[in-house]
Image (tube, one colour):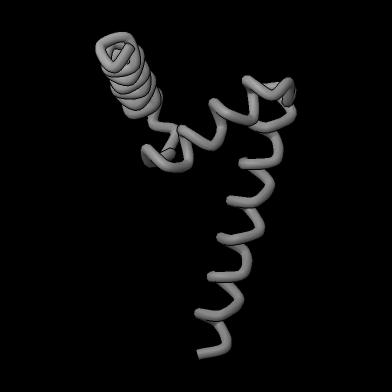
Length: 73
């Protein structure tokens, strides 16, 4: 039983490593934790295109906030 669990864990790690490499090649800017969260959300039925749109909007808002903070300083 433990061997099957180890095999499954290794498969998950390999899959996440491949997904992270693809993410890096596509310059998504997602780290392993963020990518893992996105994968879990998609597995739960979240629309990947909608998730992508939300991430883009959050990045725009973050950049805008940083820019306004820099102007204030």
